[in-house]
Image (cartoon, rainbow, N blue to C red):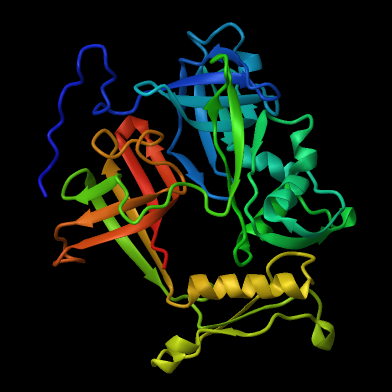
Length: 375
């Protein structure tokens, strides 16, 4: 594999071989409408996203040259900062402003978290659903958070999978913890919060996607990270540590002694018969979980993920030469890792992994997809 030759973009076309340049906008958190173009904002680290949870980012806003209404555009608890890839006009990251500090310095410091964090500040209330589609259950969990909140757009087509779900308001279960509990169960739905332009192109919406599997899955994905090529370095982390590998799994409810509910013991019989040791893992999925059906679902899912251990590819690539986020691949998609030869893989390797997370550092022209091999 040869290093790709970077060609100049045709006249009038965006140069997708150039490093990422992001335009930053400060928006009203309730409506998503743009308040100001924040040209003096600089992120203090890598932008990142992960399936089913939130990530954080710090940054600074230079006050000399800041727009007139910069305070409203960065107000804590009331603003949303969005970074847009200038070459493709694609929003790639959004974060809710949580803290702002400044004084005699020429800058103010901001701390943000991706919109999933908001779901940890809204509660489910009481829900009791029997044999309802997973999408219906997720919509019920999210119901309160869709009122008087950020511009979420629920995107949850029916999954075709029925389930029971119950929670009491007194359990103090947040929408975030409930969604994470549902996602962790066997066959549970995946979810994420994306960011997109609104119809008028003067602000942003936050599609809250619920799917059996988020992203586009293919055994032959077009997005390829190659070494040598766009990949500057990579490592394959393989683990059978506690919580990452097991051949026998049991989910336990809350409580103590004989009154404590438990799932059945789920066992990787084929692996044990072929010579694998019996590695046992017991865990409590979430606070307040005492439904035997759900405990079984959690144990079964955990065994499916853990029986041969975790294999995670951590890739670092030149962002200007790699497949581009939002155009070629996105969170949850499968991508290909093609290694011609390396000390770890002298005979090469060609595998497909799912993008469970990514990091982007526009200033250093670096992108880091975190790819999980799935059976």
